[in-house]
Amino acid sequence: MNQLISFVRPDVTMLSPVQQEHVIRKFLPSELIPSGWSCQKKSLIENVQSLYETSNKRIQMYGSPEDLEKCIMNFMSFPGNQQFFQFNDSACYKTRVFVYESLRSMSYIYKKDMYDLLFEYISEFDTLEPLQKLAYNLISFYLRTLKSKMAPSHEMIAFNPRFMNSLVTDKLHFEFMMADNHWDKYQTRFPFDPKVRDQVLDCITRSFAQFDVEVKIGSVLKKMISKVVNDVPVNENVSEYKKMLTWIDISIKKFDDMINENKMMFLARSETVDSIPTSRIRSNKIQEVPTLTLFYVRFVFDGTTGLANILLTIAAFIKLLDNGNHLDSHRILLFSAVWTTYIIITTRVVLAVIISFDRLFAVFLPILYRNYRQSLSNFLLVLLTCSLWPVFIHVILFSYCQFSFDIPSGCITIGCLTNSCFNSIAYSVDTLLHIVISTNSLLLALKLYTWNNCKKSSKSKDLERANQLAIFDAVIIILFDVIPSRIHPLKFSFIAI
Image 1 (cartoon, rainbow, N blue to C red):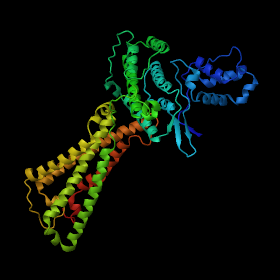
Image 2 (tube, helix red, strand yellow):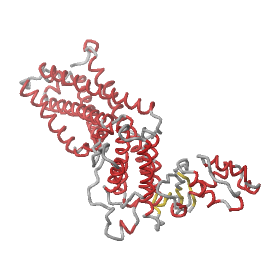
Image 3 (cartoon, rainbow, N blue to C red):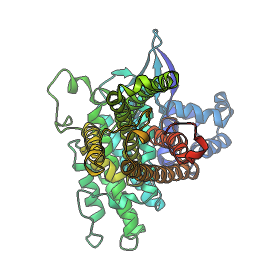
């Protein structure tokens, strides 16, 4: 099996000089390290350069300082490096995560490396630097603890690019939520009282303990937390501490859900196939994020509308060829066909309104959307729309407007087949629906433009496909429904209406 590519860029900037020196001494022969030399700088390359200045010439067999740095990075990335280096709990670093290619050109990855992928796509958030560093160290410790349970395992799984895309999407969605201060609406599972001593440590411990993963904070991390609390007083930075604790709580819950939803990717075979699931495999139902079901239903309506329009076009040609004499003898059948087509078209517009609100809700209120949207079934939403809207249209036409089948000769359009009362109401409702679609789509487009162009985070090609589809759909409706329907009829007096 050949090594294919690495999806994680190594990063040791958060390792202390002592930890960096530990790695260098593990890699280089002792005769190449002068007595009295030690790492003093923050970056690895600066420490390697200082070593080149004091060591003998034999160190040049590794090439330039930059080449030696790359060698050390590769050395840190071998399978089992976590057990080999035995860093303390406060260590936070990234190593390469390799994807391997089989003789059949299939891509595989070690299961234990999946936890490194999770940390690679951890969401960023803006806060005070000490709090940010502490939060990253805590999540790194959490994931490394989970990875350590996979230490005896050397299982590999097929590499899934779709899972990578979902990580990118979740990362950007989470960052967007934190940047827009939606995090303060998130209800944590424990209260935060800045007046209580050791409240920060207690909240972090509860975040780790809320899931059965046996992640316990050691003495080194406790000292780090105490140092941060002393350097950054809680009572003077309550909001920043709440943001950090909320970010930690959401991150842990997100990773726990992801692991339990993809057990075969993260857990050893003994925990998923060969034995009864352990406490890490919880029996609670994983909440699913709503998919593109609404759009698929819209596509069905689009296809049905196209077919109906073909039939009506054929009817229009028949009218032109025989002056409508043949159609006049089947007025009820003609009305039924045109009326059914009108219901399908207007139901399609109502679904577009629902989709626009769904996307607007997801972008502007992401936490509420994530917590409550899955409780509203897409199937139920489509069923109610397709049943209640036709009933509403029928009540307006036959009950409120007192429609009778007194159809003039040669009529083949809905405006001619119905009466003026219904046409007036239909025009007002149609205008209202299109105003709602246009307004929601404009707000959505502005928000996405701000997100994609004013944020420094990376972009994904699959990011917010549903949002983009909603905008494109609205543009199509405006161009081909709204604008033509608002053009004065006198300009098309040769068309029967």
